[in-house]
Image (cartoon, rainbow, N blue to C red; front, side, top):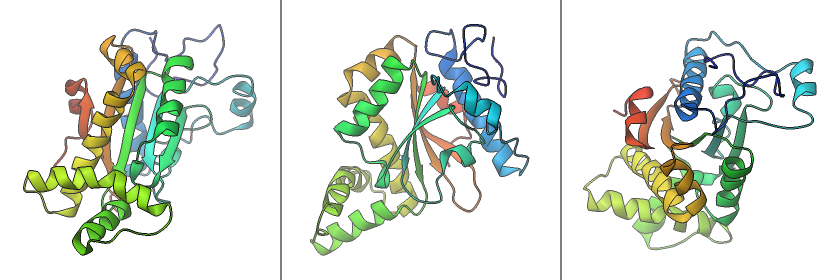
Length: 232
């Protein structure tokens, strides 16, 4: 059985890979990410899979153990936050981790074709996309150009927060992360089927920009939230 810190180094027929077909793969993948983030927070980075040997090993094929659907914020570089390297993470980033057909298609490719066992929605505190959407609602105006699509995608989360009586920005961010998890599962029959079969899991995480740590906001299956530092 693969152990945290040992997966994904030498992909090939002689190496056990952490894919959706390995029993317990979603839990193992989440443990791997959590361990990497703890190293990042404590400044004990290993920088795994970042050398010439790894580059050569993954040139022909890839077997990422996690998909990161993250915000495009420049401070949210997944391979750094989780202390990973080449071929480990399949990363899709948009402002406010908004989800459209291209994002869902990318996730389905990773889950169904590459057999990646974990999907993480990665948001962060003080999210600019959430703030822009709040400003648009408050003023009754929308930004011009394609930025409007980002704002429109965040508005349902703001409505949900309003209905719950939540007004604090970072609590709204948490709601938006959870909303993204639900939207992905509702919009992708492929992803939902893999989760139902136990071959994949979807976890929403919030990253703290100053502290560098991630915490669980939502998950499917729900018990996986206990694997990551619980949401405050």
